[in-house]
Image (cartoon, rainbow, N blue to C red; front, top):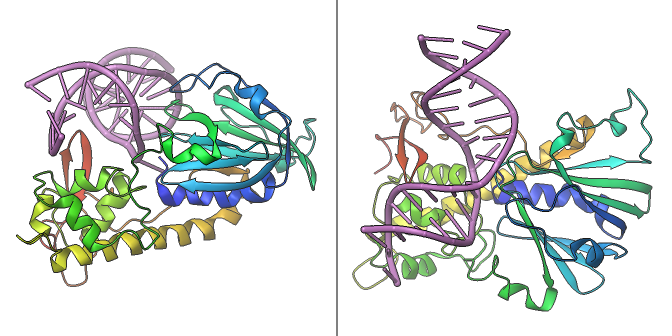
Length: 296
DNA sequence: CGGTTCACCTGATAGC
DNA sequence: TGCTATCAGGTGAACC
């Protein structure tokens, strides 16, 4: 699932439970997710104190006092949940509620810190997620993080930057924006949403947003603004849903969105005055939703 | 090299 | 009820 805004929401939700806490033990219920867990992972993590949480693209970063950082990707179906208090069960108390699919609890951080004992549990039915660990000073050279494009929340992402990346590219905008080397953190949903906001056809070649001299066209500036606003709005929505989620079952990783174009095939386009109907096509094996009337 | 397709894995849902 | 087919928010590897 999770695209940048969801991972950011997970980070914010986990921070109070994890930051400053000591990992008494990391319990791995199996040897691998999509890839094997790193060698000696449990030993490297157990006994360390978490000094902070971070995020890069769709990766959650867990900084340890040893100078190492855990790199966690949630794949399509990964989520974290917090269980507060001792392991002993108290039926009826939501804080001690067990996951309905406990068989997909793959990694359990047993924590001790202010507020007492708790567990942060990684659940992932499809096991497309993965974890790695690296020296914090070498993070940018990590195989998973190396070469990632700029965050859409920062100033590094600009029309001029994307003009450089898009110049001469025949690749459709949809694919170019999904490429994490161009922009970090966008996934299938928010690419559709950003292109809809910018009134751009997903099949359009990336190079058509760049002038012959390599400058960004006006439409590319609009696209950058759309990416920024879509991501900012989604993070805002995630923040507002966070409280409800923790109160419900302690799970973090999924929250309800209302999208403007994604998953709205055959429904009316929400662009004011457009009157078009949302279409679904398949690009590179993945669903693309767009309005043929207002996206050019 | 740029771009596309495949593989990884389970669960939810639609249709028969 | 149960079977099958299809689809799902990602990404590295394999392939033209």
